[in-house]
Picture 1 (cartoon, rainbow, N blue to C red):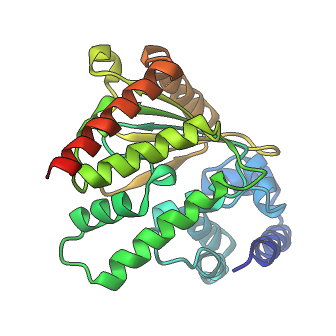
Picture 2 (cartoon, rainbow, N blue to C red):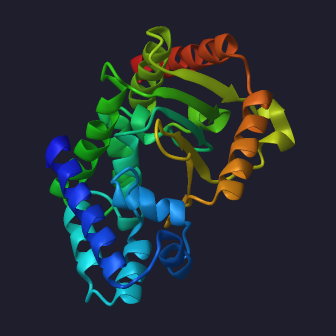
Length: 277
């Protein structure tokens, strides 16, 4: 679905929410309280500024007694089966964010992955998957990364734990390609990357991924993920806590210059190893 038509469809979703909310005699604040979000968020849903999570759409259906209308429409709009439900909304937000800050504890962030690296990660997590399944997942990941090539691309910051550099995902050649790709993006000033070294010790206490997203006309959002699930966090207090945690990681990380040197050094080591094998 093209971006323009997708936005128009979300505007329809919001208009229907507004109409049915008013038909039920509810204010934005009242409906928000009943579905466990703020009235401000209901207003943003109605204006198609922010997209709801699936569980919010389901609760709206229950409260407004709309026989699953908002869930069904949500699923048609978030119709890309290449992503699990809990991540589909994140992909939508990535398209409109003005700034992304990520922390990656073990694996390179999806937006920075090369095709070879993405394939190795996908196969490792799905050892019995068909080739078509693997290709679909890799294609989806590379498609997401297109936002970093757009002239209006968001500012992108990443803190990578040194583990990301040391785990040989896909073998030496794949790792060399992956780290060289990250270094190239840094040198082109498309992204800013800092490495959290092993020597940071206790500062590296976070074990899950963290993505912070900022927007021109909506409050910031945090997304956390473990191996089998993810959580998109809207609560301002929780988002502020996540931002604080990210700030601590960034302070403990190497400088951008030292980080780039470490990334390029690791890439050279993998390249020599690949050449020798």
